[in-house]
Image 1 (spheres, rainbow, N blue to C red):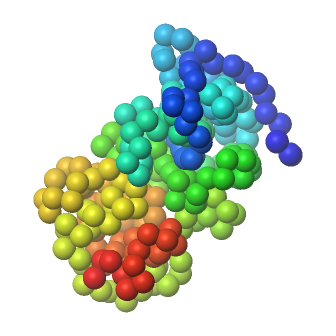
Image 2 (image 1 turned 180 degrees about the horizontal axis):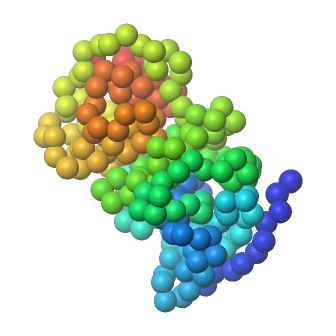
Length: 249
């Protein structure tokens, strides 16, 4: 991997990818632990039954724990674009960070630079679509919130890793918010596991919060407002899965 020094620290916690699955998803996590070294020990402990392909320390040092062609145990119970065996279809990067429990804070520049370069290589090697670069919270919104609202998703998208709403969507004039059932269908179309039932249930609120953490981090309220509608429609247009006239109405 050009320009990156990666230390190999093998974890026993991996298996073959099921059904000859190809890598289609890149999942970014934070560790939610007080030190990178403690995380490294945990992810290499066979009793824990958890791992990731990579772990990136605050100073940008990278450990590789699992070979990319192997199935690391990093996603847990998760779903993206209808795929529930996310582990078989993904590569996972753990970012050393105390998380929301131990003191949520911005990610250090050296760490961000290392994660970005690592991600660029992964995306290029496996041909991962922009909308398949996801947060752990995107694939498991009912139980996860990492890497959270301070992660620099916009900078990553500008550098070719993931999607970000275009300026027109961020500055769009207020518009009528579509009916909830249309919002649910749109979120599901983009990738979130959510049922279009017209009910503002907990799963719907969590999916909206996950969407906001990733794409509208300045306000996390679980309310799908007109700005969220403009952003989601733009993201779907970029992903080639929205009608020309806009499916949100």
